[in-house]
Image (cartoon, rainbow, N blue to C red; front, side, top):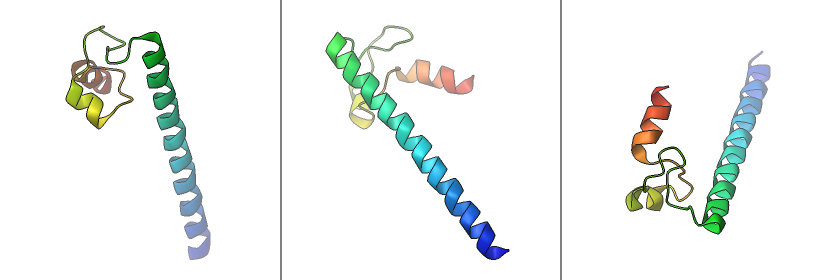
Length: 74
């Protein structure tokens, strides 16, 4: 029973890591497209500038901090 639980946990961890990697890759691809389009550094929601500090921390950021917070709040 414990061995089955360990295998199940390992599988769930693998799925979660794969999902996170897929999401991050899509974000990076989106950032590269915005570089090509000349819209990198602009919020896709409000059109305002994304703070340089935010882009240094998350170069794939597509939303300014205010819009991101509003999205997370739902």
